[in-house]
Image (tube, rainbow, N blue to C red; front, top):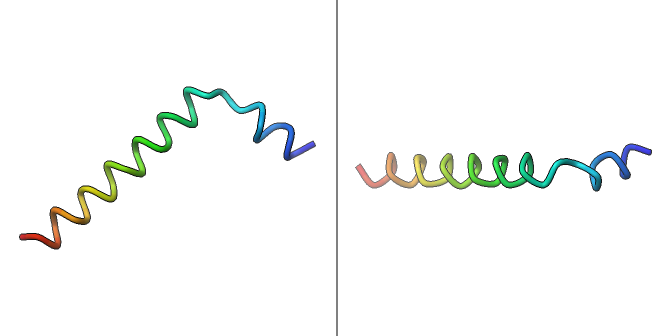
Length: 34
């Protein structure tokens, strides 16, 4: 049931989540570059 909920998750939520993760990665890379 939990797996179905994860798979049935709103695609836009997943997209937003991946974008936030990407932004976080870029922020870390920028901080290391300073």
